Image 1: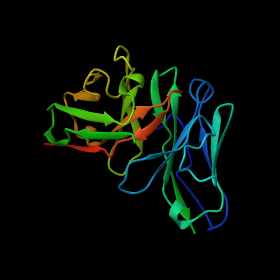
Image 2 (image 1 turned 90 degrees about the vertical axis):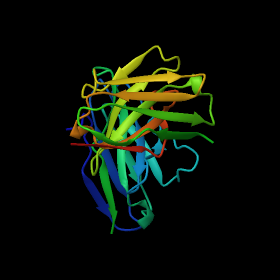
Image 3 (image 1 turned 30 degrees about the vertical axis):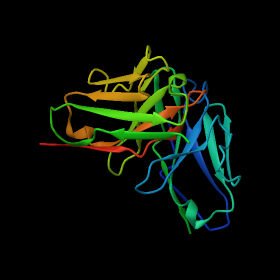
Image 4 (image 1 turned 30 degrees about the horizontal axis):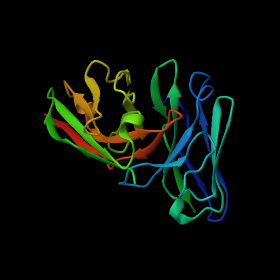
Length: 110
Length: 118
């Protein structure tokens, strides 16, 4: 069981908005930046959001991140079929003194 | 362009050892922490180990501490992961990743598959 809790799956219609949550604790999300990663089947993960809400070059502005207390959220608007992938949150945990990831969320675009 | 090229994976017997390598290019290697992240078939991401820019500080997941050793050679822009006493649970794709300035990961290699079998 992952230290960071994500819903196993989310779905929404094309063009709509979806929210993926990532719940942790003070020792991880509460004290550190959160990153989000996108992974398509058979490929390596790719950075989507860093430092809670910053988009690296190449990430469309349809993707946005936020953090409040011990939880973080990834919002995807204007859903496209090409957004179907697995999404992971990640951060550092000071109690474990280790990096941690959420269990991952599979996005389905209906 | 940041590139991370892993090597060293393959089929290994239970109880065996392996050394993974990751050759980095496209950035100032000695200025950034590096990590290894693994993913078992059909499973999620698991952070395994990290090393500071100088190599002096290392961190490990509880699940691998004592069996895995991370190291780096800044003269060769390469990071390593030595794995001992392999078990079937170690079967996974191992990704080499570059740390960013705020403690996260900003680049991933393509991964190297380690298969542990009897």
